[in-house]
Length: 625
Image (cartoon, rainbow, N blue to C red; front, side, top):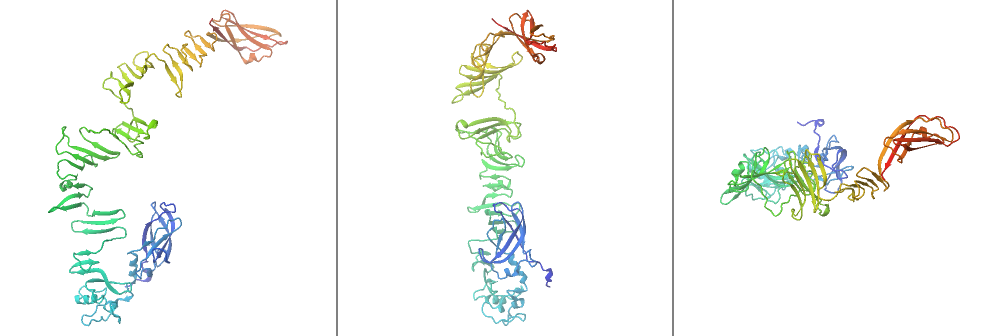
């Protein structure tokens, strides 16, 4: 029964691909794409065209159903001639890819013409009569002659029990020498020989003399649009030899089976095996079956990888047939989260003129230059050494740090000598021991860090239980200086005990200024600018209540200042309430032992009313001789 026209399946072609935008990046989102079918790979007129809105994923991949925009789908006549068809793709902001050859599936659309074969009804393909050589009653009449005569064509409805003589007669009618060739239709619906030949149970492709069950005569064997392979299958296992976008491959397709390589030295021997879990074995099939990859056939000193020595990790192992002096056999190299681990219970020695460790500068965890890590990723700290700036010269430096492998945390770096009385020394010289530059030493009560430069020795000392708990200074007869900006000394402590600021003068317990303009003697006397030393400063305050002052007259009050003596310098601090009186001047002097007089004089003619009570500061300066 034939289906009703309104229930016919649309003629659609599923097509998938990947496109880039105008910048060369993966096309994403939704965009209009035009699909067109051509007869030629380049140029030529458009045979069919359709525009669809296509959805792209993040990688630019998409899938479209060609013909979905039409109720009838892709026109049947595009593929009815059997000629090649090419698909072109274009759109806005899309890099136009080369045209794609349509193969296999689109041409199956010709099955919609199944009620005719090559344009002829099925009755034209009845078997010829074995008695008369003519056509059956259901065949259409045809007066054609020669190899294209449909009156003698083998029908697609040929039954399995048709006589061999009838089949041979049909094949012979194709061409005079077509015996044993598989027939095919050409572009004009004539039956002609194909490239497939059968003889005595052997099938040949491209040859009429097959020498095996399948004999292919040709240099290239293709299978599929992208992956080309030859598959060998059997009841026990199957495999393939082929080629894909990544190159040539040899595969074992049966789950759990291995890929083996055998050679013949009089009999077949297996010398190479790749197991289903990735184990590689050379030289010993037995070891490979035990999950090891062995690279020596003598089973003595071996090199192999094993599974299970550290959980799910894979190791590369060097094994000795006879244990070494310490009884150890296996040396393991294992990849892990942060790189490669070496495991050996004994001692690992490096015999070399030089031992150098380098890392890729682009390593995100390693940092620039050459790095050396001593520790483990699970330890609280390790030793991380790195060389910065491999250009050499003054730009090169070496960093030694206590750090985790991934630099997410750090801790203290401890330098330890076995005995607390031994010093940790820093030596300077071409070979590292000619000149002592520094040392760290100590006892149970004190620790020192000493620096040496010829006769000059500086120290940093921490004492325990003494009056001097921390000290920094010089243990030789040299001053201790502080400087800034790598310039001259700004502060200097001399062996005499004198201290200078801003100069290098050993002239007073304290000397300040470029020429020691400010000095403090051992007795505490202060000299400013080279004048007479100031030996004492006395200061006090008092509340004074002056009465009204008549014009052109003065009034005096006294303030007690303990220690003031005749001739001492006196300075007054007058409040604004007193200092703002018009025509009134103020001054003071030591009027007696321990007494300072404060006098106010009205220089105006008019009387000054009573000023308010106010505080007055009195400063007395005493000088040396």
